[in-house]
Length: 500
Ligand code: ADP
Image (cartoon, rainbow, N blue to C red; front, top):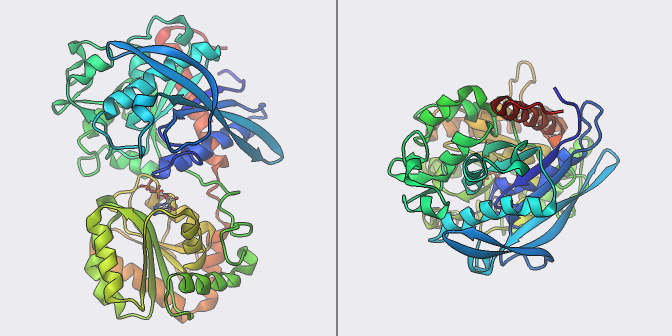
């Protein structure tokens, strides 16, 4: 085992604060900070760098260099720009470079996804990343790839770049943040990647009549992981495997689960400038002032009634049909519901209609709004996440941090982070249900409401317990460092080289 700080390249299609559509961006914006500053085995800090596409919405990014990239049978221009993120941790400060791959044709568009030429856009991104590193003269020990947009990197390293001495000591880690989005494209995409038709076989990239970028990452990376232990198990079954279960089972021994953390500086009710009133675990009673401010903001009656928050992409994954199933029954109870989300029109309209039917009890904001999100985390008493599946979930972690008790379906990362409150022992940090079923959700909400109503003192203790849990990145970052070392060892074994 080698003992030295690592050079880690983190590759992601979205990174907070530059571009975000979901939890991946949060991870990409915060895990690198933790990796750069965490003290592991007393070793000095790791050299961590991030790379992403430069989208039109990213206004400023300083020029670093440009070069041609041979891709899809011709040269394309890659302009490299650079931004930085600052990491502070336990007195340490590190500046993390964020390289941005710019190309007018591929990225100068409104929005981040979803276009007709996604395979080309992200295929080019992957190729340009591998062309960039030698020009920086920076040889990473590990390239950490994330989701289908980066799946071609492990593939290219083991095919086109297999003989390249620059990459002869570089290992790859591939993290699945959400198996549902697979990047499956027509067969012709092989040519775009510069690969022959021999790769169009089930043992390689062929996936139910398509070429799958997700499968490329799964098959070719040195090690794999997903963002909770429960999801790592679930995706090896037909119920959750999205047809990838067979491919994943083949690599079962090299498929790990590491729970995401959240950034404890950004998400801190004690200092969060977006809150009406700051509070900490000792002064959690001040949460109520945030509730009243939230009720005012959402045009709901201002009073001491339990408020249930929901902040989510409005897509099938999130279990919103269960809420539709029980909404009328729920509205008979003395409570308020506050919803923030955007996504499928079907769900947007569903919540708008609920708001029309129950204007005194439901507040709805359709759209993406990071400020309102924090006010909901701060001002709600309970937080709903009835997901059909949930790789990790950040919403429940942020809500715990803000003393907002999560009510979740027992799946994936929700199962790994939320435990049912047990009145007998006082253990547990939330309420959960197993069956994907409106009745089960209703009964979990009813248990939460009962405790809230019957015993405010016990409820306050539950809130304090939730706020005192630690889902910061420190622990998970150490697990990732372990995973990187494992990837390096596997790579070295496979190539028969020694790594010092
Ligand atoms: P996913 O990655 O599937 O969207 P996560 O729970 O892992 O789900 O992460 C979602 C993140 O995005 C959370 O930080 C949540 O607060 C935030 N979020 C989701 N929808 C919105 C919205 N409409 N406005 C603001 N923040 C949102």
